[in-house]
Image (tube, rainbow, N blue to C red; front, side):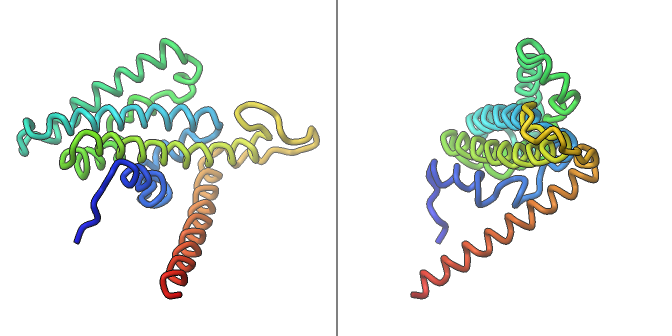
Length: 210
């Protein structure tokens, strides 16, 4: 029997159980490309979260009116509309962050996280649950890329969110701000997350067996 979903369970699913970066391995392009500074991670994550929540809501509201055969073009129109709004907002009010993220804000339109949630969840579920799904997935993505960004910025530049935290004698590892550093850091984080998940699962099994 399928487990009944509610707002909190769907939200938790995106944050932890099916974290788009650490579990589903989605959105790898921005994850590796822009995570060189903590501010980039937060900015990209929150922009993606806003698009996820809004597109999920509208697709859920319109799901009974969108013909099955044109659902993909319909998703594109809805998602592209919200991405354009977010892009214009950032250019107007956050020009430095917008310039730092560059083309990766417009490319949210083709982010596989957005399409995956529209297709697998929002098109099949009511608005409130769709909002929870978008919020959970978005915040899960934000947490993951912000963590990755801070680690790379700290080791590669000696700062976190632009503030110096390492002593003056520290020699930054410039490779951490390049593509190889992104791959290595993400790989190590995945190892740590999977090890933690297995440890929690073992403890849960022992509790149930007791």
